[in-house]
Image (tube, rainbow, N blue to C red; front, side, top):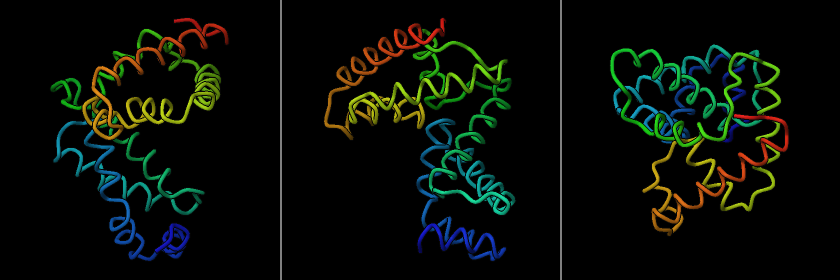
Length: 184
């Protein structure tokens, strides 16, 4: 079933939309949730919450890409879930490691909506200027929170090669952000 057909089922409020979404995207959503949370049960809970959130948001939302919409909802819910559990225990996923890697080059603009939007636009331009493989590895690490070992395996690279590529890309990002007027 195509994404358009699934979205049409949501618009018609057909419960088949949920089963079709699960058939097509359960594995994708679980991957995102597990990469962030590091716990299978927590990931399952977040994926179920994702389905509920999508059910409640379509309509009025009409995503152009159902996969991207599901990925974004799953990621946000996973990060929210992790933040709530933060006071209980430190998550076992890649979230903390990936954030520590980015701390040296990305300024904290969470308190300023305009700065956050500007930063997002700058990041999109930066990523658009990278070679495809470098961009894909960077996104895998810092959007999907994929472990270094998994990225290395998927791209037939050594872990040290992935780490070096990410380190160099973060340094380029830091310089790019300085050039654009963002300072850490």
